[in-house]
Length: 290
Image (tube, rainbow, N blue to C red; front, top):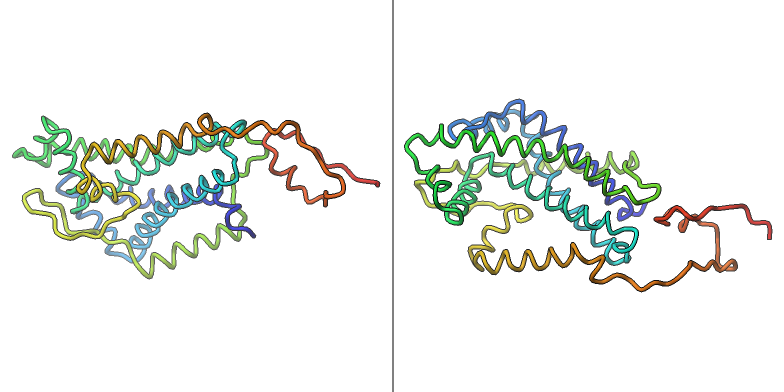
């Protein structure tokens, strides 16, 4: 019943929720600068569509939070080096993939949040990339961008299952599924949150108007106001330094070799915890007759 024990499996469950709700949304969504916002509003016009979109949004936020908590748990319990280096590094790659996929999703709505991302892209890349969004035939010239980003938004989560497989490749008895009661509670929580505070779009994007105050998802879009305050060089420099250091942590801060494990018979209660947690699958529990 320890909630921190199920962080990894709950992350997988959130991915399944995202794929399930995403299928419904994708069936209705139409890409394109002139139709994207209207189709999202069409999804929101029914109670079921609003529920699906809201669950999709909150499950994506939940996935980021669960991955970060799972990594913190592995960090403080010294389970990131040695045999677990592959799980640690693949976890960071998946976190980056989840963040990138979620950012794509916010752009596909084509509201003022997407406008802010587009203006940042135009300012950063400039050249022909920026001219694409100020051409006279704007809708036709940007349609391919919508299709590519929609494809990546749908395709990257499917690759996530390969990442999950690699994540547990060197772990013995890796668990993939949460207990039924945990999955049910997570689903009920997503539904209740979606009904209390449904996801809503900002005002439609209009590159001819200044962006006013808009609600932001700090987990995915928080980088925009931070970059505006700090600048590209400082923000991305710190991001690369911190994330790179954490990614290489298994080699930068590997724990000292404690030698073979020693079992103190008088203290053993037969709780099976060492058997369940050993990453090498080298422990066997046998009956004691003393």
